[in-house]
Image 1 (tube, rainbow, N blue to C red):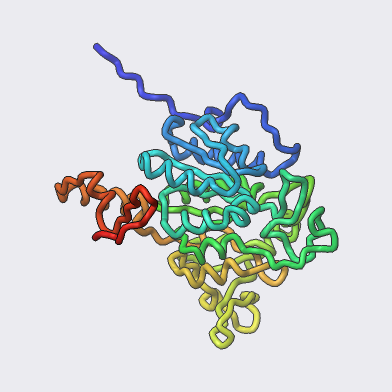
Image 2: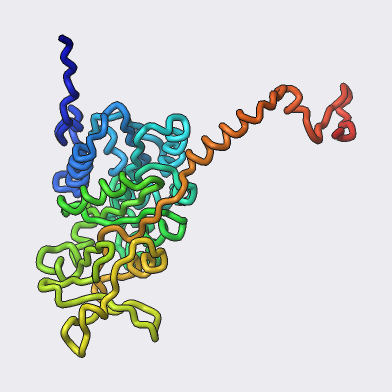
Length: 351
């Protein structure tokens, strides 16, 4: 009798490599790579079918620490290369690891197009609001007044909101989490993977050397409950240590506002119920900032749509089905062409 042994379920440690991790001690990236490995184990993916693609920066080292296929590419171009990988083999499970500088500065154009095309892959944006690898220059997400080697008098530029950028680019899935939320972050990665299309996850990550504590206004343990709101589809927007606060929509001002439940006649029914299919609501949630508002975490927006590689594949199959045989030479000489004689005179174009 032949006994077929079922493959052993992979654990998080099975996705670790023998490479020495070269992030600074205490860097938030350690927590992110741990969450990624936990998510992959939960998803029961195969290592040989998984690909991590990165650009340049601290976040870009992640492929070295994952026992899967990986490409450490060039600055800002990970989305373009990942798109090529997905088109060449749509069955591959493709992840992009990128930083706020890599993806929103030199790579802003490429991030825009991978999102609007809706390529079926996961984008993990490690946001520490600084250029860590090149020693602490300000980045596109750095706040007004940020002092750095490249802005010694303080940055005068308004920062980019990564989530708002993704929504504006047409992303069909946008989520947020924090490096230290080791229960919440893997859940967001699993949700992103389950979504068919381009999934964008912004991860607030601490750079302990060049921007330590930049998110402490909403991540510190003593303020987290009051400064974070964890979104759940179909549920009222409560937050606070005793869930006594909530988010309400002010129709007169057409804006969100923080309210105290049980005060001034405000009840649970007055609070907004999260609808992750509403892009306009997602935009307002992405714009909430501490200290006036809690920072919105969880799935801000999710609305599946046809994927880019699916559309390209269908177009190719349709062309094949037409049974039209083309001669390459005829195609090259079709339409308006120019010819140059021996005396370098250009003939009139022929159609």
